[in-house]
Length: 113
Image (cartoon, rainbow, N blue to C red; front, side, top):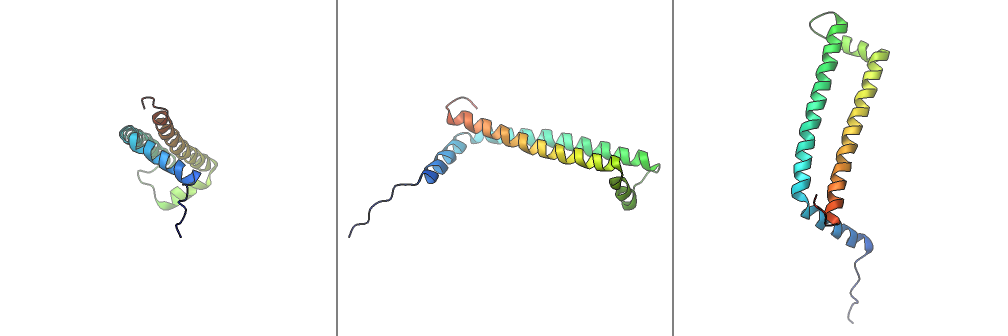
């Protein structure tokens, strides 16, 4: 008895189309990813440097120990700094994903990425 050939599901067809679009745009996606990572690393390292400078200035000494970091983190300024850092990290991650989706979407429409 011959088995009927099953039609691919909508999900597998969608995954196949997405895979083709990503492969077609891989050069643009890679260039964007590398450039974005460089910019994000520059921003985050600058922010980390500013935070260390703030900690050193508020401690009054040339070095910071773990107790000073924990004490700073428990202050309102430390909590606000943590909140800003977390918000910045999420904003960077979500902006990166949005950029990658725009490039892939333009490729899917046949527009230059």
